[in-house]
Length: 330
Image (spheres, rainbow, N blue to C red):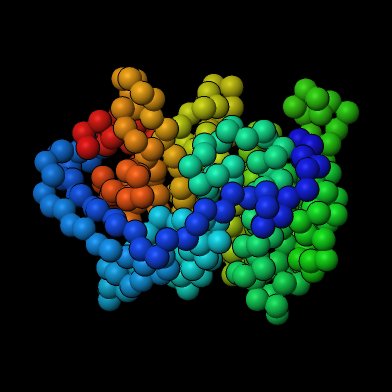
């Protein structure tokens, strides 16, 4: 897909919201009757005033000692990227090898599709550059490779968001004669990876179904059974998790939920649920599914300037579970 040529910068095009000194986070915990069943029986609640930045709290890690972090919902993209960076650093310390970072790019309260596709990808590209500038240390730049969906986007990145960057830019697919019909030429990952590469970051591999299949190939051929790490950045993987692509027509893509995704740690994640006045499914203020590693998964509701934690759990709740079980019972 051709990216938007509209120039963007972190100071003007990306929505930045004013940073408030404190937020009130109200968290309510719900008890499950059985795994996977609706949640009920509120058993406790607390209110905690937290600052805008990272504060130690109590969340489980793989280690027995409770070294945990509980973060407030970010107020702007500067804070979001700082949270994502901290989460990825902690995941690397815990030797997580395959990671996911996912958040909306058309505004913190947006959902995929709120912005035009090319503009959303261009915004994501800029945010990836800013993330890498803080996450990748200078001595690691030459050993970090960023994969964009196709070769044309690498050219665009080098002339826009990544102009002057020493990061290695690469691609998953090449355009073909039948590109307008959804066909692209897959790239053999073994030919793209170099021995000195240590970290791979894959940028928004969701426009063409072949892109995530190439990501799986990259993981199998260049990451598994090595010390390398791979981060999927804004891949909209919920499309695959939720069955958006029918398994009958896309069996290889659907199989990723059983083969690749169980190996993956979602280290930073925001998904919005927008309400409709008078609607029967979403009768709520704006709600979020949120996670910052190593903290638990949370379902938050924004009421004015306060974020209320409706539910939290260790495993990722599905979009269907949040929409049909957690939100209606809150």
